[in-house]
Amino acid sequence: MCSNSLRSSTSSRKVLALMRHASSVSSGLHQEMTARRLPLIYDYLSPQPAHLLDLSLVDFFPALYSSSAAGYALPKALPSIHYPRRMAVGHHLVYFPPQVTLSQLLPDGTDILHAPGEPFNRRMWAGGRARFPQEGGPLLDGKRAVCVEVIRDVTLKGQAGEEKVFVNIERRIATVEEGEDEEDIRGRICRDDEEDPGDAVVIERRDLVFLREKTSEQLRADKAQFGNNNRIVKPPLNPQFSHKIKPTKALLFRYSALTFNAHFIHHDKAYTQDVEGYRNLLVHGPLSLTLMLTVTRFSLFKLGRVVREIEYRNLTPLYVEEEMNICAKPKSGRGLDVWDVWIEGKDGGLAVRGTVKTSDLEDGDRDNRF
Image (cartoon, rainbow, N blue to C red; front, side, top):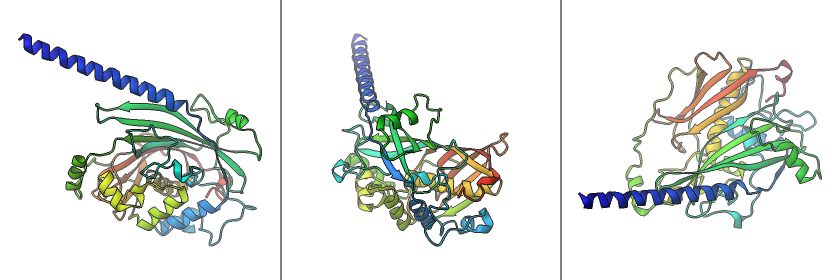
């Protein structure tokens, strides 16, 4: 009995020591990362990135992009900046790419700006939130704009040796004048209150998760399960609209190019299988968001509604050359104001789930919103 009590006491002390260590590591990461002063990201609101994105998506959604479906026909040539259209919801994702050198990339092709450091060398896109507080996005008229990034929160979760670091990044997009002082820019765009839009025309939260590198044993176990999915979450029933597509390698390549994304899991199959333990190239987290918003904005347009906010969570990976089904329906009891949106993987399981808030489409915006 005394021996059992001693072992129990020793075990308890070890658990407490591990908890104190984890708390110390979490506190240190939070303090260091939230204090980072991330560089401003400048861009020009040219119509070209949005146009190239549309050219990459139109063959997947020909009915949605037709003029009869949404009052919009894809221009055959680059749209004019003298008669500009507004940036469509979701198109902000192909602007303000990370402006880093090759030496600032990590071994997996991601950048160092938001990474916690060793031993958390693997990055995944866990979800996020995007808000469009103005009636219509910024005009794609070639003017200078800025994206201000702030690391809002950092949390460490999981047992010792299996920890994950969740990094919450806020990005605020606004127009700026040439030569405007950096402190003035931060002062009028940044807000302590995350709900206060300030001068921002788009406010996005990105939830990234950083993980340890997989051991050889973990990789062998992962490879043994290629083709199997033991974690199937049932999606909502009876979507009001849905669109099935099969993302191609070409789409993933173009999206990586448009977003300046060098993450190997989107273009290097050998790396994806042998280092990350996934059976094939993964669809980008932001591409999944772009696809959901593309389907939703066109479908809601026919109902006289526009997207004002989306919050979403990535549950399971989506893979290249595998069919996905993008769905939406009004949330029960909320009329057309709030919608459930989701993506089902090839097995019919829930891969991405989100909530969209909408508002009435203003008549004056019908011609230039898209």
